[in-house]
Length: 536
Image (cartoon, rainbow, N blue to C red; front, side, top):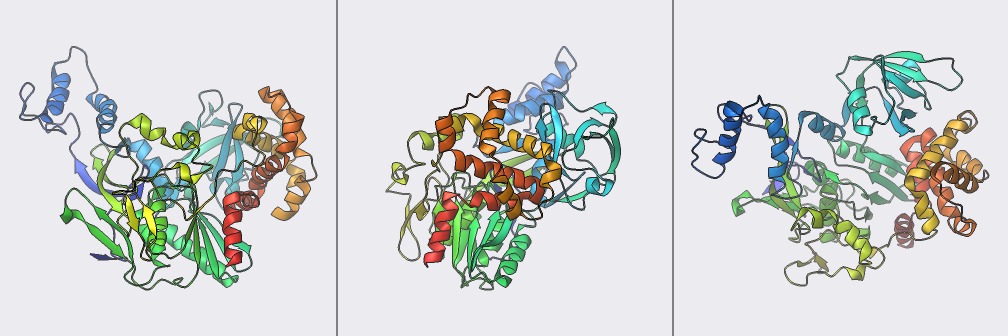
């Protein structure tokens, strides 16, 4: 039994977990990973793997890099376990950890790839690039004297190239509209903070809204700063948005839930292979917001630590869950570091909500597991929650107040809101997010000087609403993507298109806070949560 403030050694996420520093022998060493007494005899099935790698290393006709063979073999072996036990190379591990750790070392820009060119969409305030005069709208065409354009450029390559050791230099060749030739910048990499909070604002009188994008090292602190700030602005109720939040550290989730629960209310418990592996976590009674009503927003991409947060609120009848059934990830990973600084993130336990629910969905095979979200769309569940048939047997549980809840497939919300179909037709679907985003960037880039004159999100949106963006988008989509204009359907989708474009354009000047606040204006789940809170 543990109190909420007892340090945790576990981390939950769809792909990430906390590192404990456990060392495992490197393949190819004299003591192979899976054992093996010699090249030809083994004492058990697992020993065959070590023996095989040693045999290849010593006797294969050609010279072989056994480490590279192991790199290819390990993921295949782990696929036989569960969907969340994974192998990460040193590079992949660093990228996966950066966001959760709250910072990384880089140049301080947000970018997109447009027509095989890296376009800077936003320069982080106070970052290395801003200090040197790099601007939003600049194109990075050379890095350290080498060409940085072409079809080989992708997001992972750009991230790996531009991030690096703090204090290291990287030379950028920048193409800027109106400038003659390239502009050279010598950028010194520095720590770049990564926020867990997309937006925190007063969405209505007495109602504060916080969108949390992950559960990382600094999330609890950032979350508390947001809640306290909103309280000072008059918030007496909170909407916590966990949609698209795939999880993170269990510790962060439990600390955050603790703020809303009374002493000794259970938050979560984990159970490994045996009953002795069970760990229970309870609220310590020192939460600052125990009397504040809370509404939690979830959808099909809310997973892991998000489901722990929502499950604790729901099972304790502490607040209301609104949205759609969550992902269904109830497995705990622990990180084991290999000698070459790679990691195996191994599932070592399941977690259970206070009522005893394990919300992990079935994983008979990889394809069925990965296709499960699409199955929800095809079977109609995204429009009608009754299409999801709960197991009335072992997955049926009750909250502290006696309400029936279910496990075995995510958190089912108290109030269901289906996918937004207002304005969604075949023409809008043909446009897709990529075309909308590309046009928003094109429009911003073309009109950056004029748009930058607006000093508030509200002023900019008011201007954009007068610019006939829906027609301009239709012309752009026809020219760039060959999408034939359908005037009737375009008119049906006009409000939705305008909102999406407004949000994307506003983001270029007012960041994520501007982006999400604009989207929230017509978001069905947010509107339902807001009306629910205003009616109470």
